[in-house]
Image (cartoon, rainbow, N blue to C red; front, side, top):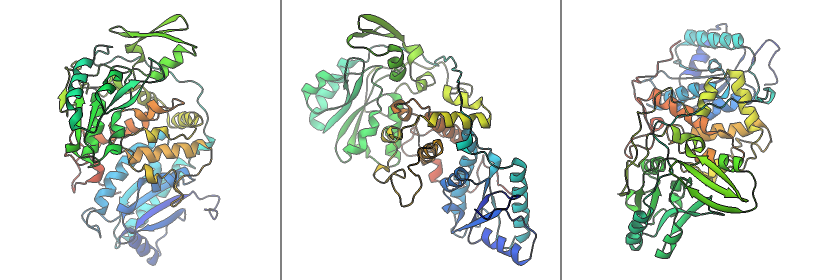
Length: 483
């Protein structure tokens, strides 16, 4: 884009080869007067335009991006623009959470014979971008010095209650002969921490731990046991990940034995460790009905679960797995389903910020990122780790530059790959060693999916088709962009 004149802006257009590119050519043959800001990239079909193409352009200097294809029901490949319409609408709703004005991106439809319409589209979009001015750059954004935390009230009681451990052990003991292993938790480096655990023989049951410190989502390990009969202990949120894996046929139902127990909340261990501070010896760990009691270096610390629960637990309406083979106990009934006002705290914070403040928020947080990819490795639905876009140099999507922009771009990639699939288990944020609130990006997309696709919730129906893997000729919540 070095040839851009001083009074021009950088506008990128992805045009369908069969219709919109033909429409642009028709306008050119007719010598229609058009702005010169546009840089056209011809693609076989609008369905070929991955949202990452748009994000890559916006992250790397484009002031605006336009996507144009055949009119719906008139696609050269029959359904390409139907798929594109859903993906691009989700993308348009996603941009503001990053601090990008959604007016910098538009998609529309122009046929090969509509040269005059193309002139109107490109002129209007160029005027819209000029009205917005040059796009702010992430590298030039301010930093945010303070964040106001909001008090949370759970929609169902949070407790450190009993987990029916003996009943769970008895059930596993009776079925060890029929499964290769059972996935559970055991004590980690001390009594305060747990780690995933593979139970293969009866003696292993002595180390099994189930409770509010059992924070890992064990569904992350199911694909490593593909083809083997495997049991798995699940909380309500973990079970949604199992259902989503079944839905995408990444595991088989006949290979999985699901053992569920009622979850009454799990601790945010990062906050517990932060407030506990460094210690030499851990003397004792116990639980009351409402709190975790830790004695370290002779000093007692009390951590009430209503103050130290993971943020996802405050709005959880799935305390018990909907799909299970064996259930132990019953879950508390939420006061009501999560209402729109019951927005997770990180997402509520971002909603309250202006676009420049959101950009500053992400720049400030991403400067702390060490690119360890724990968020990717802990995600049960991040299924392309063997050929991850962050590792490959063909295509070269990300660089190793230590900039907040490159780090955020990876999170954008991860979030868009999980659109309509993320069950909100929170493993990405829980595993982040520097505490970046990246779950807010997934939560924002999940909210968009619910609004656009009739309340669709991932991980609830193993026979459902994720919204972005399907289409409808007549969309209920997506308007035809005929401007």
